[in-house]
Length: 570
Image 1 (cartoon, rainbow, N blue to C red):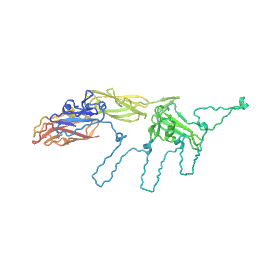
Image 2: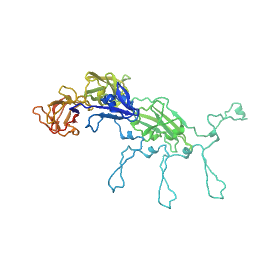
Image 3: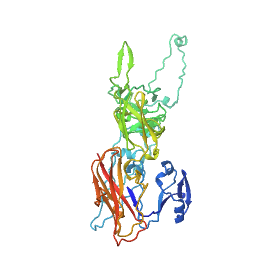
Image 4: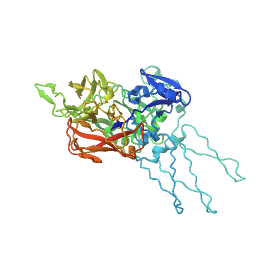
């Protein structure tokens, strides 16, 4: 888009946040006014081009941000700003917020409306976890005195719910009842009350024992204490974990309790897998571990994508308090997808053969495209540097390992490019085994897109539609037709386009004034719009513009017209 200007108009912008109305100059925000700015403050301090404000400066603003636009163009009824943001979803914007849907209709017969919201699959267990639930029932049945609610839960025992002690409250309306009895059958010994280690001391007058000819024997029947077993070292893996397989010793009697937790940071923190996601777990709290730790079936069912970077496993064992039996774990093994066709055995020596990853890239129209591949079928990662500085990822690290071949498609923001001089773009890439290589290219900084240029080769607008230079026809007398000016449109997108369509923006039309387009200068054949076919990268096309006025056209000191272009990517 570019502008055709008859007389110069003035426009500027101030940015408002919680502190007041601000201007930006020399990489610094300054407060212009605390209240509504005056026209003179816009003229003296307004920002002429807000595209010069870097992303880091926008992040310094506090609270809600407003863009306040001023122009002395009396025909201007609205202003447009192009704002570039990171991609987001409604789910991210609406997280932890109440949403109200307001619906209006003039249909007097409508009594209700239906709103359909598509969400990710979830269960009530995920929504209600660790929350109190109240179920309110209404009925108009006067004979109903009670209601029944059936809830399906995981198996548990009263001991799990009640713990080591419980009070039993008994009520009866039998006036003859003076006492109540409660009979409980359980495995119990007074020694259960002792905490920690203890010694058993006894006395005997058995001469054989006193003489040392026979040892004293103590027989004690009891259940073992619960056990917490933490893996002391990381699991040695030479590939990606595909699956964890745990098996138990088969027993016919009811089993004890086995719970497991996983660590992804060498035992610093622990997690349990519930509702198809990892949740933090304090394994030192054995009651919590027993309640929320993973059972054997859960561990075996964890998908591959959620096992990445697993380093250790912790186990909680406890024999049943109601049955004389224990839980016997047979083995836990990891299924690992190690690199194949990369190992040779010669004379009993092990040699690891690795082929360095390769990259095939092109850079055009400020777009980097290509493929990063590894002949070993291993994983690859990369990072991009622009003029010796980190560009992508922003933290300077390599991207996460991804399966090869990996397609790269990255736009280079022209605000980070040095215009008119040589720039250096470098891509460093690495395979799974750490072998590093790089690709580098040099380019002269320029804009990208379908760019308008005048006949001297100067750009009329930037990549984001900002006006760089105007076609100035000066003062036009009503009834005259101006001289013809040549305009060039150049394909700097980096890829071919088709179905190119050029027209003047209809909202700038003025009675008695017509902006005319033509494919050629002589003869000038006026037409409302221009269409072109395939345009390859770096190719350009020329067209011509003039302004025709009617003798009855009204005077306008600030006549302004804009042109727009659309095209389809090939």
